[in-house]
Amino acid sequence: MSKQAVSTPLAPEAIGPYSQAIRCGNLVFLSGQIPLDPGTGRIVEGDAAVQTARVLQNLSSILDAAGSNLGQVLKTTVYLKDMADFGMMNEVYARFFVDCPPARATVEVARLPRNVSVEIDVIAEVEG
Image (tube, one colour):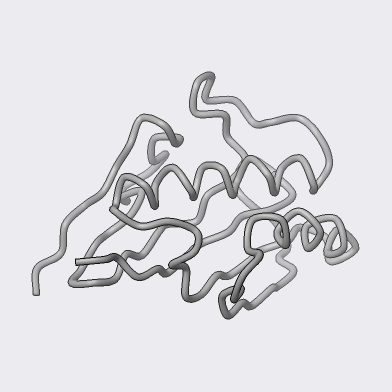
C-alpha cells in the first residue's frame, strides 16, 4: 500500500510540515483541525460551540476531498483547552455524528495552536 497526500482549498492550508490528510488503502488519517476559516485564514471568533462547528466543517471538507464523509469516520480525538467546554462541544459534535457515532477520546490540554478552544483529528474509511 502506498500513501497519498490529500488536500483541498475548502479547508485551511497546513500551517506546518504536514498534510491535511493522508490516504493509505481504504483509510484516511486527517491531521488535527482548529477553527480556522479557510477563506480568511483567521480563527473563528466565538465559544467552544462555534469553534467546534468550524472544526467539523473543515474536517468534512477534507473527508470529501479524500473520497469519504463524516458517516465513515471510525475514530476521533477531541482536544479541549478547558474540559468545562465539554458540554458545548458535545452538543455540536452530536449534530455532525447522528447515526453510529465514531469511537472517540476527549482530552484536556494545556494549550492548543493559536490558543483556540478545540482541535479534532479523525481516522475514516474510504470507499473503493
